[in-house]
Length: 161
Image (tube, rainbow, N blue to C red; front, side, top):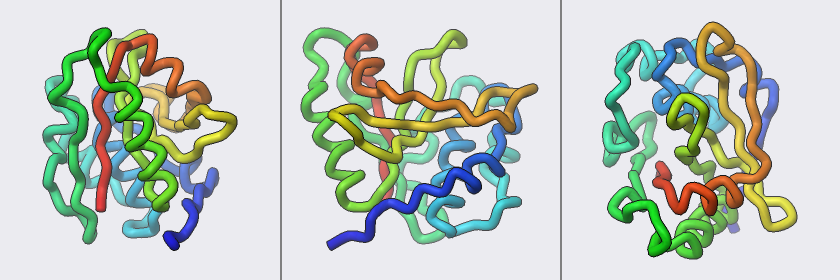
């Protein structure tokens, strides 16, 4: 039986998003910190990414970091009425049940923002992220991930093994 996810708000609160468009590597770093693969001061992924605004989960697809291989899933499905939402939600549930966080892309006022899904409660997924600079130290939450993804008609995720 997999170990339950250990979600530590203090780790999340200590992390920060350093650049305007570095939410993807910020979430990867946050997962590594939550799993205690790196220390609080690890920002190598964001520092390498900088202000790159044309990146995607594909930049981390099949990358191995600190013993974890990251994989981009559901990117091949266009958003719309035919998007396999049930399959996506099932996959996220399986990842959480097996003790793994999931990084997800959600619509935001700036276009897209990445979050780390860490729990499922009352049929909904809960996720956290860090705000963009100059408020990169502020933790933000999304407690209705399924509803957001359904409204968006799909999204992609980044998982690891």
